[in-house]
Length: 288
Image (cartoon, rainbow, N blue to C red):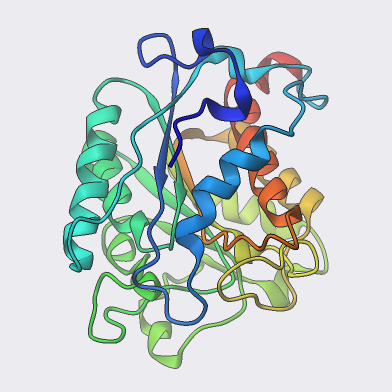
């Protein structure tokens, strides 16, 4: 992968020393079980970022000036999914203890297992905000506990896990659902009353994990397992803005972009979502 700055920003805003934000790219899709290709997601993400305006109208800000450093991509060095999770854990931990705001672009959702482990060691009173079409609560899938279908199982055993937009799951996953912490899409699409309830279930420190298939495939078709009936752009932003206002967001990942050269809109939406989250993190309070 060619070394670039995020969105083509000046190198003075992209050094490790001066950047508040770390962007970890993880081009990995070995555990995907339907359509593979999310390992190409980080490269497509960076390419799309070069076509994005860097001024955010909503927050009246240019958050890139806080500094965004791209780390060396995390690549698999063996066929072992456990080894890959360990690598993600070690890289995430390294930057967390440099007191950086760590953000991650995948890759399939299994990478979240490693990053959440690292965040859990750094922060007390941690909860996970999981936005996804799928529950991802299996303890093992295809003989592998580090499969993307298991990405939230370990977290569900350790932390409050608030799940938003779920509309597909296996019956066996029901026993791992935390009571009151799952917000199924068929129940929340009619109004916004769920937002306050979901935020109330979160603890002080929140890690956000977003599988882009949480969005309706009419706006994000390029993902590994698209499910009908998902969230739309402004509903998602309305909720996330409330979360950033009420809670301390300590990091996030965005996963499962499976780029399609004939359909770049999903790449661009992923970049816009990433930049919007950074704008909410650093600029929202100053521009209410």
